[in-house]
Image (cartoon, rainbow, N blue to C red; front, side, top):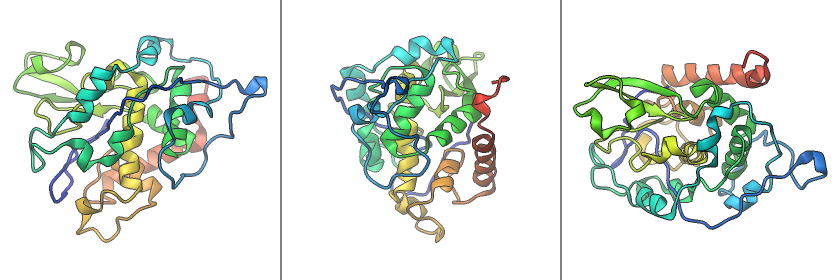
Amino acid sequence: MRRSLRPKISKGRGRRLRLGIVLAVAATVVDVGRGSLAQAPVTTWRASAPLADVQAAGRVARAAEIRPENGAANRYRPSAAELEAFHASRFGAGPNAGKVADVLIPQRRHVTGAFTGTTDEILQWAAHKWGIPEDVLRAVAHQESTWRQATLGDRSKVSDVRAYPRQARISATEVYESMGLMQIKWRADGSLNPGTEPLRWKSTAFNVDYYGALIRFYFDGSADPWFSSTSSYGAGQGWESIGAWYQPTPWRNSGQLAYIEKVKAKVAKRTWTQPSF
């Protein structure tokens, strides 16, 4: 779960943001056990632009499903209309109110959720697409939801619970703001991750794809205007970018650093492979 993200961008902010362009691609999963074209697991960050969906899909190795309850969301592929609405979304509140989210967070333009497969295959796909180490994505998904797409988090009081999906409502005044495998946090006022509702919980691939886009926003150095007063921010900071998912400002804050250590510990132990998982 994560805290509200309120970066000091010259004009825009948001906590977790993503984007999607309609790409008609056939997501293919390759079976390593059958002499496939699948490449070795991603273990280092890739500096280049995101791969096309079909390219990333071609590098996925078959993996059994350990969370069958994710089935419907794992099979859900965003429609053209849903992606169009996502890409056209604007911030509705805060210093960036009225601004198109895709313009402020350009990596969002590559988010499509155009892949179906098992939970691990989806994580692999996003790792290849965004050039993030596979085990890092697996560990973050464990930290956030133990790989359960139906996970709810970040309980909060709101003025109108009817603006939130039914499964996120707690009472007449409270809701869970974060949903999905990577726990995308959304607010009805448009201040956090505009356009991600309802795809954040309907589609596992969209949820993870969006996560990858925002992490790359930090890793690529695109968030520089947000941290103009923070000399320690810069491109290529992998672990700090992962920690920014929890709390990006001020850069290298205590919450961010503590979150990084939790994810690192899960990577080291590969906790998702343990019988208790």
